[in-house]
Length: 411
Ligand SMILES: *Cc1c(COP(=O)(O)O)cnc(C)c1O
Image (cartoon, rainbow, N blue to C red; front, top):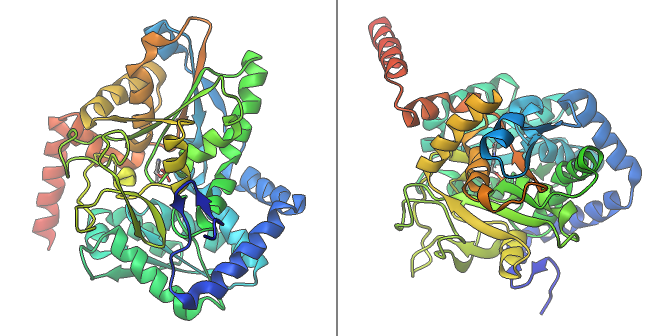
């Protein structure tokens, strides 16, 4: 068996034969840039003056005092341009697309965050961009559709299937089959056919590289634990890779436990033990699927964690016990969010709040001399509607009601 692109039993390249030239061209250029310090320097430089990197590692004094079990540090990916880690990957792949002499990028997006990051880097680097998005998702996440269009991207609604992310992935792949001579498929997370998982993890590794340097500078020692939320797995891998060879650092990925372990009520593939090995969307991993291989519905308060698959790299790291995977419920997330906002004056994205909730749950097992790092993958301003609902904020509900009435009258 060809083991290239496999992580244990997970990964691989399951694509229509017609895409082989596109994938081999991508593999060749990915290898080249990895041994070209000039490429990484250019990437780092643009992230520096365009996206504000390096992002700080903030000492969470309020939370540290509140729990009284070791020091808490927060890696501030929310301070990136566009408010999350996704731009690290989007920019890296857009630069790679330029290197491959492509003039256009395509992408799929679910909640719309990856679509916005792609539209931004396309505008910045002068590439055309087409974003595929399920019609259902477009309606749920209209603000992101609005921004993608304003940045000059074309947003194509997908009316097939359940009109959500997996249908958008299929449409984007269909586009790529007929356009790869001019077009790069800009994958949003560390999943999909090889080499995408490795490629996305590579560009996100900047998070952990910075964090390790920063904690060594601040503490003079490595953290005892590092936490990150896990949707597809890109921010978690970005944070974890650099600590992987330090076995004294425990790496904890936190999945979306939604309303609890009942089937269809969450997006936890590993912690709840419900993901089954399968092949879809070009790769083999643990998917939430029924016995016939149909993808199950997922549920989470955080749109960005609401995904049936998981990075093959993370599936393997979990199986080999290098990463521990936990799940927290929406309720725990709302409680954690209240705490972070009032003790730190920070508003993490609902996705990122999963990492906080996972850490808070086990704070009492840290020694006083320990330090931990929580990856704050993004900022929560975008989640205002869901946060208000989760916090049961009546005044906000009344405000939205008034706006809605105004809008109805104006129509
Ligand atoms: C998209 C997103 C995630 C989930 O994606 P990963 O690939 O698992 O990192 C997490 N946090 C934020 C803020 C996001 O926008």
